Length: 285
Image (cartoon, rainbow, N blue to C red):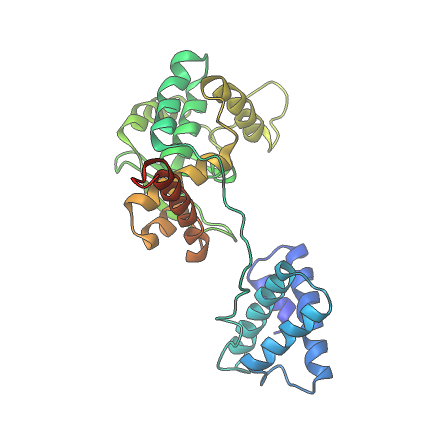
């Protein structure tokens, strides 16, 4: 099996397969120039390659991406029985800044949004259900767009979120305040197939229908709280709040993160909040 076939078997997109193949080819070209075989290069030689990239003016972010490609390549070699280790497995770029969600909302603000949304604004139940899923289960817009009737297990009080190439599947608890609204909506849509929250209109319904409805929903939410920005802000707020009460690995599962490092970056928000609180209330101030 070739490396390209390996990536295709992992169901990566054509663009990703092309990018990874090209990135690994550049690494292999460097190995060839150094008279090093792909099956035998070491951790030290990988560091030499990273230094080579720096001399060529390649950014830390780009080197990080190349390392990711090399990890996949080593996994491929291991699967083919050509290596027994992965020298790139524990190599990360020091000082690489990962973007953190900002302007987070407190869990109290989020719950107030949910309570007031259908009370103060004229909205249908599906919009309130979608908002509840973002606030209480931390789901993404893409996940909401893929939800179908059978994903809801109301007898068990749970919702199943399918995994993707970037996220893991998970079974999450529904809150009591969500159940009644969900029960009524599911009963009214017993025979709906496919995406559950797609609005039925006269003309053919596009795939972006749910996304457009959510965009309008956020315009409405800003009337209730001007601090509201978008779905990413809400998800970031929810994950940050989860980390204050739950174990890191538990939050990783709840958020559907494939890697714990994706969850850990939200801990920085907790540290920033603590610094801010200390700045306001420290007795030496």
